[in-house]
Image (tube, rainbow, N blue to C red; front, top):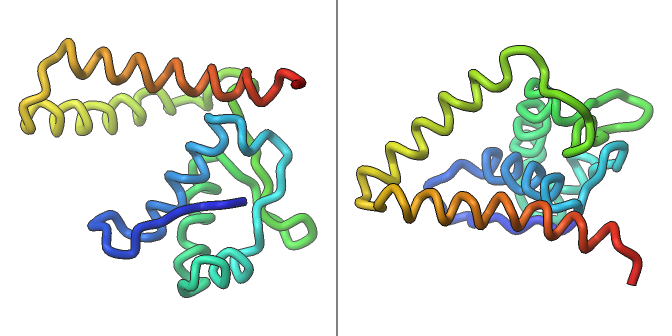
Length: 136
């Protein structure tokens, strides 16, 4: 699994790892049941402390996106075809979305621009997954 993180970003590294894993699942690069690298392996690959990767994996586990056990390690638990979200997820998601929309508003993005960009991104997840599922 290839992840890119920005060590100079204001976004904490563990959050970047979490975000890249979620994006990889949405894009179809990681599917339900796929194994993630061990925390030590990913930390070595990214040249960061393994506790940082542990924090990212724990956040993904708490959010129900991956499961972790001693035998199989970290495995993708949910993907686009996993069925309906867990109870309460939509409310939590809406609260986070509100913050992102507020940021866009504060920075002067017009509502139609926000909608266009959001629609384009949402469509890209479906397009990328479909392209990966279709044999060449």
